[in-house]
Length: 124
Image 1: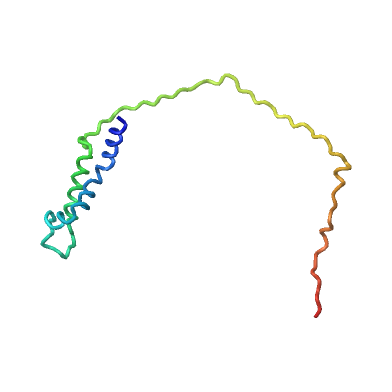
Image 2: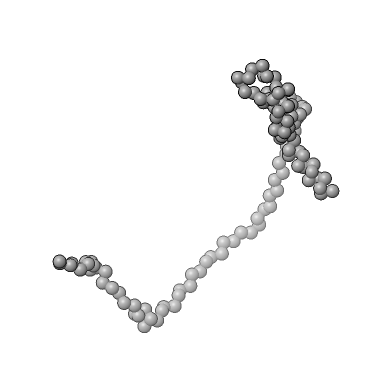
């Protein structure tokens, strides 16, 4: 059953491309026999006129039959609303952090950043 559905879907997808595949497979026959511009070799048509006609036929078949008559259907939008009966904003409390140990905070060494580093001068 799945294979049949797959083949049917594949056929539906490839249906618009079938005239092009037919043109490629039967190129010699179409360019020599079915071409309408055989008398005008300067055009280099090579059966492309026949291909365009076949593509037009397939596009006509895919167009809806009643494209002129568009039926205006009424559309209704359904919207559901739910009333919110209670809404509270909870306050956020920030607790004070404990002070760090003073011995720990004095363990770093600060460099004097006010002085500017100058590379050594080599005199040769």
